[in-house]
Length: 259
Ligand SMILES: [Zn+2]
Picture 1 (cartoon, helix red, strand yellow):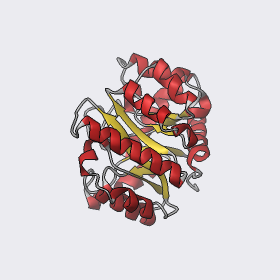
Picture 2: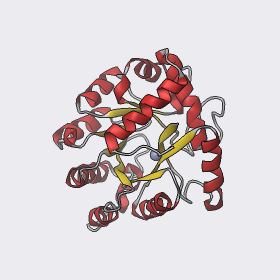
Picture 3: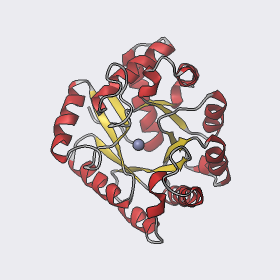
Picture 4: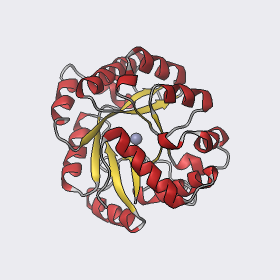
């Protein structure tokens, strides 16, 4: 049993008629749990529909920093209403992306703060996206009291000092295909060093396929390769890594796949 802690399965990212075959391939690889992540309100609605319909799929609903400009006064209330469904396990993905800057930075920050408060109100953990904004991301999490809800630093791509501050806030570190890239030394260092009870693995499908599929469209079944790489870095078996990451996800969000 292995869980993909962050993937995108809606029509924006994967052809609708491919979802069930894609998940069947993943199950054949032993991947039985999937956290499907929404990137704006409309996408979040679709993610929740998938989570209701497909076995082993649970939802993370929120507005990605790229889409912060789509946030309106009603968005928070709409997300809160959707989050009444027990299949909703996380708020996000939310955070800051100062690499692409697809939404203005002040809007990204306001929408990030709004979703941290929403997570606190809903008592659900956060799904955090952070790129090229490490100090601002951590400062905002600290200022907004995110230690009260905790969450996942998804697609971890920072270094040990960042990881330590995130761990101190109670956050979990989720490793993606980047952990299979030989040149990603800082990420591989953290994957080897981080506490066993705070690590997760994910695909971020359809992005960032691990070696040996690097550069190709990613899919949840490929989380196996990331799990093998992280297990190798830590000197444990892939089976052990699968067990502990599944247990960690359950400790954080209260859910594990049934088989
Ligand atoms: Zn994502």
